[in-house]
Length: 184
Ligand SMILES: [Fe+2]
Ligand SMILES: [Fe+2]
Image 1 (cartoon, rainbow, N blue to C red):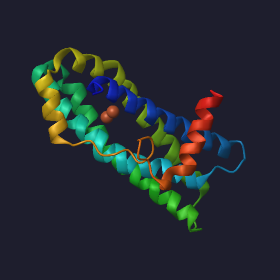
Image 2 (cartoon, rainbow, N blue to C red):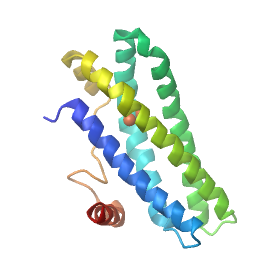
Image 3 (cartoon, rainbow, N blue to C red):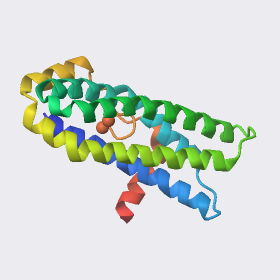
């Protein structure tokens, strides 16, 4: 079985790929080109339905244990826990803007682009903080028992985009992400 820290890094790397993709779409808008709103929507939908439902709740459980074992981590961890809630709300809002665009509702494209740019900055900062401060400390401090409790608290959901049994819903996004990864 893959160890929890490696799995944790892996999920962050995949979220980063999605944020990179989203950022390219935002850049295309700024260059006067047409971003792919459907795929932007798929990115946010996935982050709402996979990251916010499985990754963040699992982190919530791991972070709580980490703060118990290392009280010095309480302050940064409280911030990260709060950020999970902000990311969920910001994602929901962005999703709604993208839905509006796709349904031809009257909404300034700038509103969507600004919301996407804010989401990107916030999410990237969050991931960087976890990678730099939390994962290394968790690797040192959390025990096998902790990890078992974390896994039991939030069972891993199957990943509909990057997982082995990924479904048809994200076929186009998966193709684009693979193409970009190959080009990089
Ligand atoms: Fe997080
Ligand atoms: Fe995370």
